[in-house]
Image 1 (tube, rainbow, N blue to C red):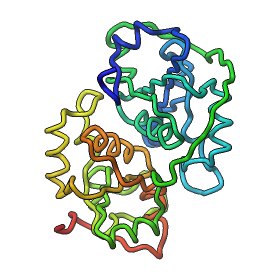
Image 2: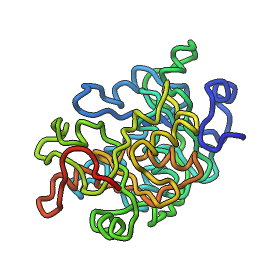
Image 3: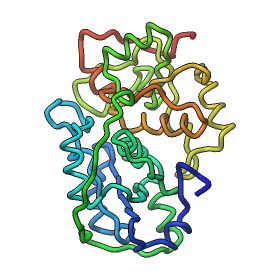
Image 4: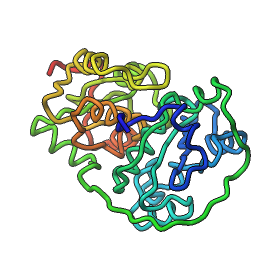
Length: 283
């Protein structure tokens, strides 16, 4: 397959029902949207898809939203979804390209190498009049071996140490939230951003539910003062849109130095961590 990150709707439609192909609906939405991925899945999904709930397949003891679970819990969740070793996996979501990137990153972080995202997602699939099915999918449990890449995930203290060494932190939140002008969608969080971080809103990396072409991606990072020759850690509000930054960097041949899983949900909720307001400071 020529594209290591995406498959087309034509490609997927030709392979529906093929043994060894796993289709994963990773739809997730901010609480402020009023949309619930699990409910929408039951109302209509790509035939044969299973629903990957990032809030349920998570470390629910951390107090932070959809943090990565431990390998044992993840392997169990994958088995129950019928997602096993050696399968070819395709992820999509109900926006086009949003939470699918988080599921893609999660699978890769636990050792899945053959995973791609459906370009244009469910909106493109529907717009083309392709088939949908309702209700729950029939699942045959499969064995899954979780191999956690510890280097793919960083915490707040690791972010601080990395930035002190010159590693860049790219925040994918909307610009008004980065500057501290808009309230966070989660109550109790401070406004602002991590001092020294750069702002590349994830929407600047996407066009019609797909990643923009390489030159446009490079321009989006350059406009924010990001030097793509230097390491980058991705962040956002709760670790979802940060994965779009990771995806964009991977597509540019500049794999991220990690994803800050706690993201602003952690940093903005901890009084012991510094914050900055306004535009990003000069690099």
